[in-house]
Length: 283
Image (tube, rainbow, N blue to C red; front, top):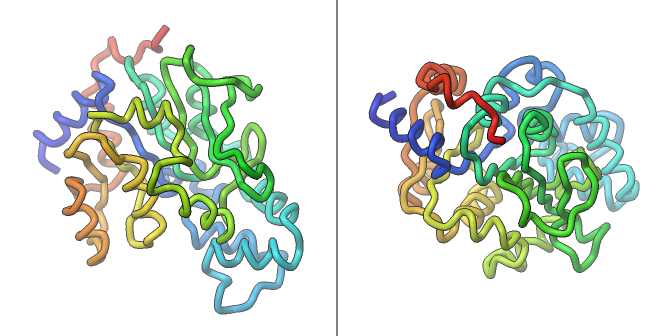
């Protein structure tokens, strides 16, 4: 890991120029690794543990969720997701580090747990915007929530916006997880309709920092590309594993520099650089 790269990322985070984009791999840190599913495969296993699903799709999260929705009902999918993510794990060191930054305009959380909300609870002036399923809220793409979980009209009063494009277990248990959920979004995402206006505005000119993310699947690449659209032309991804051919092409195409270090090592390096004045919560 080049020290110049860490310096650039650290400076961008401190100045609010970097947008942390958290994937399921973040849950590999801390106690969350033992209680919450930290990959699509692990979540698919949770959903199919009590429901018979054809062998060919048992490890395919969106297809398995669609099968359960078709043959058991949407409520069964929602209940299974609740059971998978209801464990009250504590935020990881990364969540707490991000919540302590002096300037944090936007965080993207592309998974279903509520650890970012738990970490941000110590911060003032923040709120959430979450993607919602058309199966349950037809004609509406997102819902806004205040820090206490109550519905909000917009994000105009918040200094920090937590964007959860796939929904979240808290506060309203809305999830985009089945094939049909994503088909609805993908029909409109090229023209940015499902992307909240505040997210589109805040991301302009900023750098994205991908943490705990992989880009091997088309769906993962597509959402990352659409969410960082019209932002800066320089981004970073902490990716210690050798990228697949599709991942390598994606990184090159969108100006994403690969940081070849494990997530725990990267977080430790950032924490070691953090000045004492930065740990004060933004008031």
